[in-house]
Picture 1 (cartoon, rainbow, N blue to C red):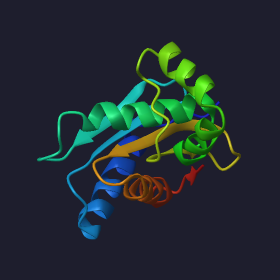
Picture 2 (picture 1 turned 45 degrees about the vertical axis):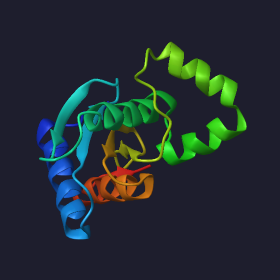
Picture 3 (picture 1 turned 180 degrees about the vertical axis):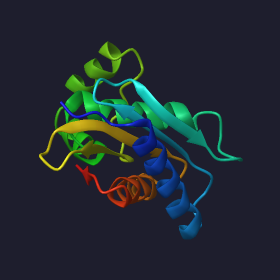
Picture 4 (picture 1 turned 90 degrees about the vertical axis):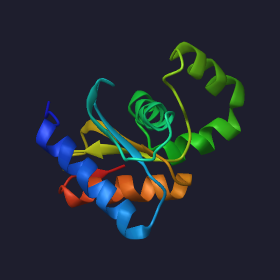
Length: 141
């Protein structure tokens, strides 16, 4: 089993935040977790609201828990809302199936973790996560 290093997690965050700044997005928080849902690295830009880290974490946690991007989880939740409400309850508030997180995968497809962002629209959050993962040379899912 491959591991996501702290250096990789920090690089993902730095690249994601740089992409956000270039695009002119609102202040963001970006969180990287490992394949077990444990926090690896986090940054919250100046001016980002107090909820940003928690929301970014919940998006990333949901992605790792379900093995899918948060965009895919939004679609699944629309088709089965009762189940996803139960998942949110079971996850004790850590499970947020909203667009803005992607899986971090090794070249063989193994899930190494996830990155989640909060501060912009779901599409903006997702875009900077994708950029961060790809800039490090890993695969996003």
